[in-house]
Length: 153
Image (cartoon, rainbow, N blue to C red; front, side, top):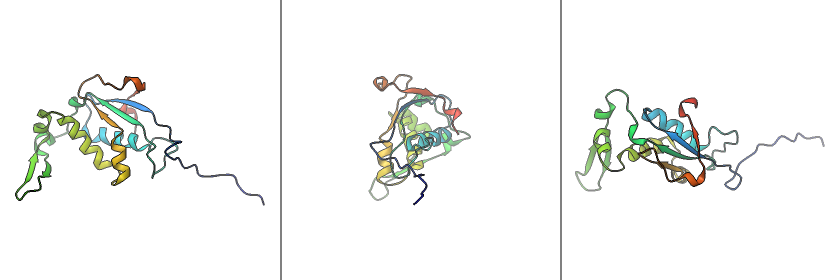
């Protein structure tokens, strides 16, 4: 029997080729930066993308404190959380959140988390994101390569 030998290649956890990538967030708009970071984390820029496997890169974001919002979102946008008690709904703006410790980290993680799949896979992929407020990071042993996030689509 003469059959074609074309097979769809499906990547699994062992065969996924994960890399370490450094992204500079200086003067980047939050939503645009996070959508590209979510694609990197998910592995959508790779030709071997498999939807049900964590085949994306490990992403290090530096200069997270220098992110910007467009328009009046810095003061008008509100993040809402609930304490669990009656009347326990709390609101905070990005300007107030920046003043807290790890505030910029929370802003970026909140945006990226909303762009990833919900469930076990999305929670696992979030562990591949590392955010630093300054220009230095402690992941130099992994030899990450620096990429220009503006070149990605």
